[in-house]
Image (tube, rainbow, N blue to C red; front, side, top):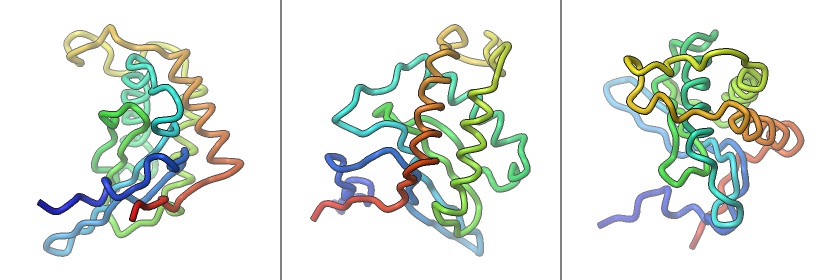
Length: 157
């Protein structure tokens, strides 16, 4: 079997950033998948699952209600708990979505109140939420994106 592209990323040298993971197209429709890497894999603890769940709810709510909502296909967590995937229509670059990702983090940081979609009839694990930790991760990530945005993957041989 062929090695998939994400397995060619050097996870020992990967730092937090916004990376274009892949572009796909079919019958005139282009989609771009972004790796929103919140933590450095294999060097930092993975994110707390309740915080990941809260970021997923708040991030998806923000992205699907904002000015670019018609471009958003999907937002959700990585299984390794070091970040999130953002899939958008169009042949976009990491630089194209960096302002949107920063705005999403600012939204999470300023959010107060009941987590959208965190009711038993709306979510399969509605009790597992952690807004203070979600804000911690979003704030840390926003700071990294503001001071040293990374958009180029380190690759393995």
